[in-house]
Image (tube, rainbow, N blue to C red):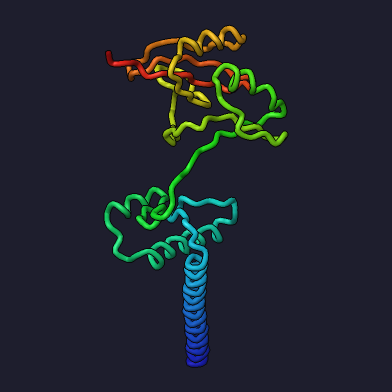
Length: 230
């Protein structure tokens, strides 16, 4: 009996030693993971400092089609970029913006302004634009390189981009909106040139008179004029 007790004690001792070794290895693994995390984050911060990249930071808002583990590391890294590169004292307003996947910082756009916005329509039939955009709407040909023709005006105009869930009044969202000074003349000329009117003309409750027409490329164009308040 004492022999078996001795064997049992030896086995227990061996088990404890193995368990201790296992715990030490786990601890070392955790330390290595932490070191890797810190080094990777520092590299990412250095990259951000050198490139000035403006990246979304919400954890879970980024997905690049890569492996989930790698994506998770990148998300954490991007969040560290924001904390370390921009500032530590994140306000409640900024934190709410970060939580939506965007950075709100006054640094961006301070030294630049948008000079113009150009709509690009992909087509192989570039010449087909002339009747609609030059002959009817009166736009000048500003540039023609053969593979691209640009119609426009030298008048100073307001730069605008609209994002809409519908075109208003239950209509589809138009591809382009063009404001004119004489909508009745444009409407008559569009009909005379054979372009199909898809909506209107109608006076809308938000203060414009407009109609929708298809251009030669099938784009839905919103032709409008603001109603006078006389």
